[in-house]
Length: 289
Image 1 (tube, helix red, strand yellow):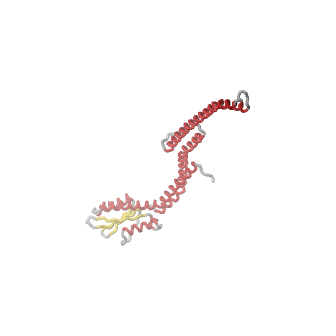
Image 2 (cartoon, rainbow, N blue to C red; image 1 turned 60 degrees about the vertical axis):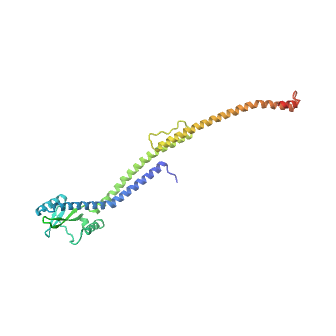
């Protein structure tokens, strides 16, 4: 199998990491966005019913009616008041009544709503409404009940919308990730490739080989250290070459200086060996040799 080059490796790793993050984000949106939307709507409804309860407490009956009717219209909610054992409805959302089990408490109501919205497409989910309850005190100091209904976008429609947009979102994410990975890989591997080319020139002992960088990151420091090491090696090599030349010159001079007397001695010994006149007296000339 052919090994990948540095640019290809960097591109592949970067793209893989970015796509992993994108897939995890899409998974989180699909699973947690509907629940977060429902939780936000419940909090908003609880705040509104609490605010209305404070506004109508200790107010006259006609003032209570006016406040609740205006509130239902402006907040686009349906409201039911309990007054003197009677239930009065105000429709700001749509004309239908709020009917709850009288024996169910608030905690059980919230659990029922969450179960309907998150797990099953029941009647409440199809209608897209949530309910909240609170108490207020009338102008006679009696505790009365208050119920409010708010319309929301059904959760299953939100998930369907996310699934519909998912292919387009993933496609755009892939393109953006690929482009970002390419630009990042090209930018990050460029100084390494330049340094590789320069070190090849340094291996050929090119005196003009020099790594230059405008940045101040670790790669620039690495290039600066390589430049220093290369110049130190060039100076060392130059010193060694000069020493080698001096050694050769010394041996040439020594050889020349030793060659002349050795030649004379060799001639003298040959004459003595062959008893050539006047070297027949060997004992005398051996002392001279």
